Image (cartoon, rainbow, N blue to C red; front, top):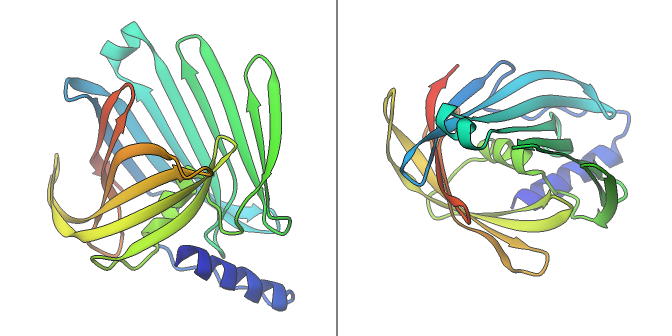
Length: 249
């Protein structure tokens, strides 16, 4: 469904190159900031994560939202193993497809910088990994492919229906993935600021060989026009992570 809508929109733009295509209606705004407490394996608060829609500006021949997500380890974890992550994306305001995304990570003394650039007309993704050396690659990708962060914000713009199933191609770390989102009915979610009703969305991620990549993912988005992600759970090899919204503005 998501892929079909994106392909149709890109085709319409190609047929009317001199017309100014309208921007998509979105449930977020420039300046929106969501702050999360991050817990690890139910033991302690491992850190914080903040996502911000920084601005909207001309980009790659169109206009894009510049969205940034940052995560830092808390005081206890930093004393043992300090970590910092910054993920950003340029989300096209007309197609709601990623133009370019990057991830910068600091894990102890190891620093990495990864970038993904989408060439929609060529149907390609260009990936670069910078550590002590630089490695580049390119791969064919579906026309509606997203990066991880843009996928979440594009998902917020979808009209949800209980029992619906959506699919979205996602290119991450130089690998194409397919993500299926199963939408369940809204349910109560308890937050530090009080209880809200939120849609439970279960992503299933497989790589280009149809092998599962991440298991036991769940996202809760508010049952209102904003579709704000209020909770994210993920079971990873290093433990279970739980992000719970602390504040929103």
